[in-house]
Length: 132
Ligand code: DKA
Image (tube, rainbow, N blue to C red; front, side, top):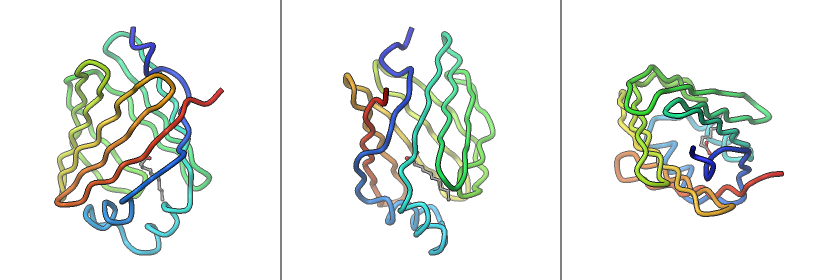
């Protein structure tokens, strides 16, 4: 069981998010709105079947997937992607293929989840803490 990941996580710090959103083609208005919000992610795990809900004051999204199986993802900013997620130790790797390819990783260490978003030359780091 991936107990290390299951639960509720709240954003506490972020760097490079605007550059990442620019790299994947998000327009200025949506970038400004997205930059101002602090999402909560709810991670549920049942064997190889994972669900990640991202809750914000603007919009909620959910991805549900089986590790290693491709699925269609629609991002909060409306991009449609073919996505595959794998797990290496305590690192979840979300590979997104679309008009612009991107790799999102989430790595857990105790009560901290570090999310890294990479596209083209842009690298964004977002730190989440376990919420009660
Ligand atoms: C993250 O999960 C990165 C993605 C946040 C998306 C926010 C949704 C913005 C909708 C305008 O921390």
